Image (cartoon, rainbow, N blue to C red):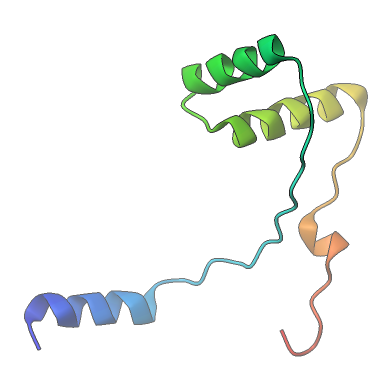
Length: 81
Protein backbone atom coordinates (compact mmCIF):
# COMPACT_ATOMS: atom_id res chain seq x y z
CA UNK A 1 0.00 0.00 0.00
CA UNK A 2 1.34 3.42 -0.90
CA UNK A 3 2.04 6.14 1.63
CA UNK A 4 -0.79 8.26 0.18
CA UNK A 5 -3.26 5.39 0.59
CA UNK A 6 -2.18 4.94 4.22
CA UNK A 7 -2.67 8.65 4.89
CA UNK A 8 -6.13 8.53 3.31
CA UNK A 9 -7.15 5.51 5.40
CA UNK A 10 -5.92 7.20 8.57
CA UNK A 11 -7.78 10.39 7.69
CA UNK A 12 -11.03 8.55 6.96
CA UNK A 13 -10.85 6.60 10.24
CA UNK A 14 -10.03 9.61 12.42
CA UNK A 15 -12.20 12.18 10.65
CA UNK A 16 -15.00 13.47 12.89
CA UNK A 17 -18.41 12.26 11.81
CA UNK A 18 -20.87 14.85 10.57
CA UNK A 19 -24.12 14.82 12.51
CA UNK A 20 -27.03 13.38 10.59
CA UNK A 21 -29.46 16.12 9.65
CA UNK A 22 -32.84 15.80 8.05
CA UNK A 23 -33.54 17.89 4.98
CA UNK A 24 -37.07 18.73 3.83
CA UNK A 25 -38.00 19.62 0.29
CA UNK A 26 -40.06 22.73 -0.42
CA UNK A 27 -41.62 23.09 -3.86
CA UNK A 28 -43.24 26.41 -4.67
CA UNK A 29 -44.46 28.51 -7.55
CA UNK A 30 -42.97 31.97 -7.72
CA UNK A 31 -43.07 34.99 -10.03
CA UNK A 32 -40.17 34.69 -12.51
CA UNK A 33 -38.86 38.17 -11.65
CA UNK A 34 -38.71 37.25 -7.94
CA UNK A 35 -36.91 34.02 -8.85
CA UNK A 36 -34.35 35.98 -10.85
CA UNK A 37 -33.87 38.42 -7.97
CA UNK A 38 -33.23 35.52 -5.58
CA UNK A 39 -30.72 34.06 -8.05
CA UNK A 40 -28.92 37.40 -8.23
CA UNK A 41 -28.92 37.80 -4.43
CA UNK A 42 -27.58 34.27 -4.03
CA UNK A 43 -24.87 34.87 -6.61
CA UNK A 44 -23.72 38.07 -4.92
CA UNK A 45 -23.34 36.23 -1.60
CA UNK A 46 -21.79 33.12 -3.19
CA UNK A 47 -24.72 30.98 -2.04
CA UNK A 48 -26.98 28.46 -3.68
CA UNK A 49 -30.55 29.58 -4.35
CA UNK A 50 -31.79 27.06 -1.74
CA UNK A 51 -29.39 28.44 0.87
CA UNK A 52 -30.36 32.02 0.00
CA UNK A 53 -34.05 31.20 0.48
CA UNK A 54 -33.23 29.63 3.85
CA UNK A 55 -31.23 32.71 4.89
CA UNK A 56 -34.10 35.01 3.88
CA UNK A 57 -36.61 32.91 5.82
CA UNK A 58 -34.35 32.89 8.90
CA UNK A 59 -33.93 36.69 8.69
CA UNK A 60 -37.67 37.20 8.40
CA UNK A 61 -38.41 34.88 11.33
CA UNK A 62 -35.78 36.62 13.44
CA UNK A 63 -37.25 40.05 12.67
CA UNK A 64 -40.81 38.80 13.29
CA UNK A 65 -39.88 37.12 16.58
CA UNK A 66 -40.57 33.62 15.28
CA UNK A 67 -38.41 30.97 16.93
CA UNK A 68 -36.97 28.27 14.69
CA UNK A 69 -36.50 25.11 16.77
CA UNK A 70 -33.31 23.08 16.58
CA UNK A 71 -33.56 19.89 14.53
CA UNK A 72 -32.68 17.82 17.59
CA UNK A 73 -35.87 19.16 19.23
CA UNK A 74 -37.96 18.17 16.21
CA UNK A 75 -36.43 14.74 15.65
CA UNK A 76 -35.20 13.28 18.95
CA UNK A 77 -32.79 10.39 18.52
CA UNK A 78 -33.93 6.98 19.64
CA UNK A 79 -31.77 4.75 21.82
CA UNK A 80 -30.44 2.82 18.78
CA UNK A 81 -28.99 5.98 17.21
